[in-house]
Each structure stands twice: as C-alpha cells, then as structure tokens.
Image (cartoon, rainbow over all chains, first blue to last red; front, side, top):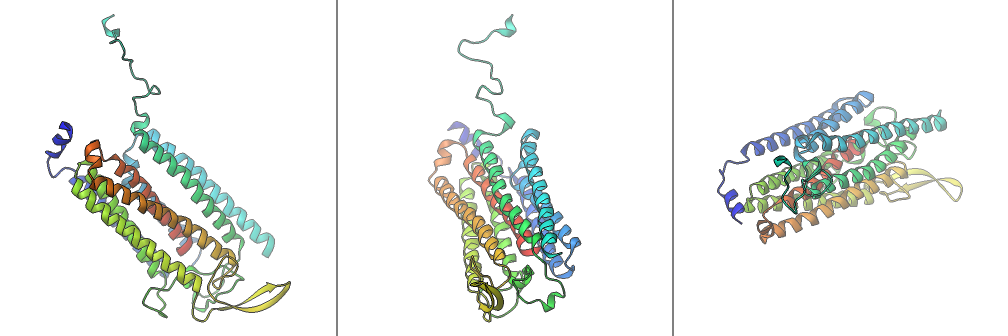
Length: 109
Length: 256
C-alpha cells in the first residue's frame, strides 16, 4: 500500500512525453489513411497502386505494433520472436498469390 | 570464499528457474504476445485463401465508370461499398468504411491512453479512457451490422446474372448476397466478405467484452488493491491487434 501511495504523489506531468508520442502516432495513422483514400480515387488501377497500398499498410502496421503495442521498446529477443514468424507468413502470402495467378492462367489463358 | 556465501533457502535466480522474466516481459504479457502471433496465423490463413482466390479469378478490364456487376469477374471494391446510412441512393464510395476505420483507430488511441494512465495508477483516467474505448468498439460493431445488412439486402435494382441451374445456363435477377449467390460478383467474393469481416467482428466483440471487464475491475478498485494496472496493458495489446487486423482487411478488401 505504501508503494501505491508513493506513486500517487508523483509529478502530475509524469507520462506527458508518452502522451505526446501517442497523439503523434494517431495523426500519422490518420494522415496515412486519408492519403490511401486520395490514392484510391486518383491513381489508376494496377501494380503501382497495389504496391503503394501494401507499403502504406506495412507502415501503418509498424506504427500500431511499434508504438501502440509498445513492441519497439521491448527487448530485442521479443521483437524478433514476433517478426520472424510474420516474415514466413509474408512468404506464404506471396507464394499463394503466385499460385492463384498460375490457376488463373491455366483456366483462362 | 566470501563471495560465494549464500543465505540458506535462497538460490541465485537463473533464467529458467522462475522468479525472472524472460525477455523482460511479465508472464501474462508474453503469453498475450504468443496468443496474438497464433491469431495472426489464423487471420493470415483467411487472407492467403482470399488472395489465392482473387488472383485465380479474372479482373474487370476497362474504364471504372462503365463498370457493371457480373459473376464473370471480380468487382471493383469502390463500386460495391458505396452506401452510407441515411443517405439512400447517393453513391459515396468507401466513405462509410472510412468512417469505420477512423472509429477503430480513435478507439485504439483511447486504449493506449488508458494504458498510460494505468502506469501512473491514475484510476479516474483509466476509467474515462476505457469508457471511450468501449464506446468506440460498440460504434464500430453497429456500423458493421449496418454494412452487413446492406450487403445482404443489396441494391434497389439488383443484378441480372447468368447462373447454372439444374445443369442449364439461366438468366436470373439476384438481389444482395449470401453464401451461394452474390449480386456484386462471384459467390466466392461474398463468402470471403462474410468470413473475414465476420471473424474480425467477432474479435472486436470479444475485445469489447474484455474492455468492459477491465473497466468494471478498475472502477471497483480491483487494480488499486492489486497495486498494478498491468491487466489494462494486456487487454490493450489485444485491442490494438484487432485494430491492426482491420488495417489489413481494409487494404486487401476495400482498397486493392
């Protein structure tokens, strides 16, 4: 109980820097989403558009996982335990997109 | 010799003997991370299946302005999702889903603010931000319910589609979508829509339930008595993950 009391007496400005970082992340995510809308209606459909969207999605994911989920500030071993499986998943997605394309060509070409 | 003296009954802690936190994260937090990784696999499986199907179907070729719904090719998303509540008949492509995305990002911010308040043992602020997060969650679920209802009922005119019935090709007016027919495109498109947004919606729903539990426990002083608000952080991880999944669903379902 004594410890709890001690924390209550802390400087009321504690965490102000953290809150600033949180709002900064919010604005970054908001601007990125707004940009995605702009691109959705201005850039013609094709590989370029898809690439832009995927890159922007990964940037947004980086901010959500890094800042909101605090992963950026964890130990290196934890960061890698999360990232490595995801890299394999990314490969699986790519492999099966190519597979889907092969199915398409086998049927329609 | 003096350096090796140990007090009877105490053992020098080593990494895997308990009492120490591997990766400097508490047991609960670490397990939440590993759960989220396994959940990532589940969602990835759905998105991988979607991508494979999407790439094995023909795309619409031609000007987006002349687009019409057909089950012969995959639809352009902005032509499918263009309805907004109370604005019947007005074409507002992707506006509603944009609002939903904003709501979820905003609720993620209020969640992380609650976590930050928890670090300072600031109960009043934890309660305030948890309430905002719960409100955001319910609003998102309400939006999704409306979107599903609209998707299921379809547009006013429906689409005339060529389908096989009893072994012969027939022309048929299709209204809305279900698991076997879909006025917006191939039936597989509707199947994936229901499965992926539905699975995500289920996650949002369980997240809201957990958030309510956390709110209740902080409001009744449970975490003050325990001396730690770490539970807010653990549930926060889950809530951000739900937001993260939506970012991917949004890109691959509504934009690409």
